[in-house]
Length: 535
Ligand code: XUL
Image (cartoon, rainbow, N blue to C red; front, side, top):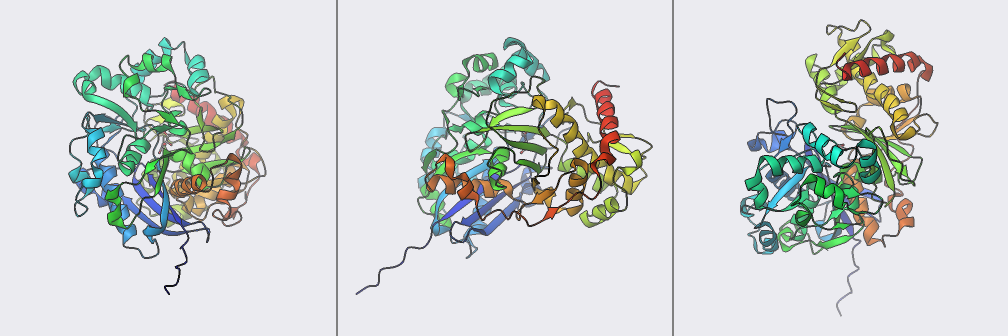
């Protein structure tokens, strides 16, 4: 008699398509750990696309464009690597979810629906991107780093009755990087390709479409970062859609709650050993990170140190920022999520590190060689155009800081990044509470660097906690997949994340009294205000 085989425990796969790299990881819900991970760096590993920092080089620093085919190749490569890792055991995966950089728009043509539908018939020996055919009406996608759309923002904002009204409707002001001004610009500047566009996807819904073999809906989380959604009613806003383009409504996919199973993994992915797993709606990287660091309840603050630096947390109430610099998005838990996004994150840190030819340990030693408060020397770190506040590129030094001072600049770029969080958290929404004794969770590539974490703790006067994995967004995607397959109830979030996020590992206490920074916060705020006004 054949012995009945014990079913092996299921696993979940999370995929995060970030600005500069794609990470895929597999979690084991019984062992409550990440069992396998693969990572693809766009610039160095898919060099044929010619990206720098994940976007196409351009003379105009305001341009932020990326080729969508790059993300498909990165997905293929990351899964190929996981398939070769016995620890991943992809056959056991029964649920998948995508996380992706927010706000990027992908323009699909009329062939897209049928090409996606035929994914199951593709030759598994050949790469996906090479076989998909022409599915794009625009070969490039504007991504969140783009700030070319100030005119379109002003036009849409005026049509919707000004910043405060737009914020009350969509949760955010009309921002240069958001889909609404980007779509308006594309429709007006390139009417031919716009006429060929049958559907507009976001990066998260685009990659999810490939997984399920049809155009995927957009989840409430990423929808709330489009400038097109009535955030309280959780549906496309007719007024915002029309203010963007009169031909847009038919090109928008449906909006669904983040915890919706949107389809089943198509046969193409069997080549990696994956079976017919359930695919959960894709969402943005910040919402995914919120889950990935376990900050699933109000009062828990997270800082994500990625290409952008973001500060966010869950809120029960909808409290838009009438000043228009902060955002109210929808979190994967279905709650509201307040967020501030600073464009000059890792690129500013890397610009300083590279200017002085340092590696990260050397950068860390330079920071340690200078006292907290930097003897009053500071920087406004706008190496690229900034989003909070909106400002053109051009870093500025104050308090006697010179460009020759290596250690002073290393400390100054970090202190500036967290001083500005103090300044703008206090201004946005009537205040994100930054003071407190509860640790702030830190994720993203920068969270690997202990000297950065120490500066955060000192400047905010609050302990910080680093999650074990810096891949908060990819882990969050895997946990979202797990949450849905485990029943998907609102109350189960705490249980879903339990065990995956060590709460004491990597805790760092402030080393100085927070008052060291009180004067510097004021000096920074005035210097930044003057600089933003062109002073
Ligand atoms: C958030 C934002 C960035 C991107 C980066 O509004 O624009 O954090 O999501 O991936």
